[in-house]
Amino acid sequence: MRDPLRPFVPQYHGLLTQGEERYTRLEDLLGGLARPVIMDVKMGVRTYQEDEMVKCHREPTLRSDMYHKMLKADPGAPSAEEHEQGAVTKWRYLRWRDTTTSTSALGFRIEGIMMENGSVQRDFRKMLSLAQVTEVLLYFTKSRIDILTAYHCRLQALGDALDTSPFFSSHEVIGSSLLFVHDHSGKANVWMIDFGKTTPSPDRIRHDVQWAEGNREDGYLIGLASLTSSLHQAITLASQQQ
Image (cartoon, rainbow, N blue to C red; front, top):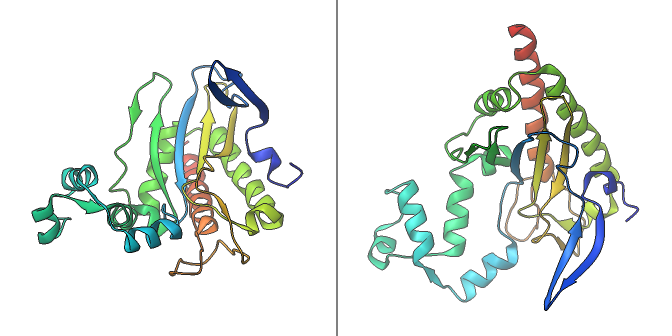
């Protein structure tokens, strides 16, 4: 892969066959880190493909599991009809989840954080503003300016690479994440991961405009700009605290 994004994705080491199973071998992104701290950030203004939406409209399938997930998060979210059915369609659930988190508003959402002691936090659904994101970033990095600055520089470099990447401009990037990793020594990096829903687009994708049905836009750059801005604010606040 000679695309400018090559330094930002895990290195591919081929396929491994064990018995009847085949595995993809990828670079260990936690290699060299002692007790790593990890944050998974889902990028884009939507987490469902347009093809998924079309399929749900054409062949709607009711999902009771997704209804119960919605009900647990917000008992008032399902409609009266959905309460009666005890189920929702996949598209309805995914659309609801995106519009009730920072995905639609900011172009990203924090999926989870694992601290150096192994504790995991996933309850970031109600975090909707950049100010709230900034507080999480300060918590995640313990307000260390060196780590915050390393992340900020990495995102700026990623933005430059995305601007010149033929792959990025020709693909709809859905459900992909940025993986933030660092340890107590100050080693820090950001990687693009999760490309299971990344598909070629017949038209050039801008990535910096809101999605409308049919335009295939994912808003990836909207999320990157928001996240970079929040990191900059976290650096400012951390500097003031010290």
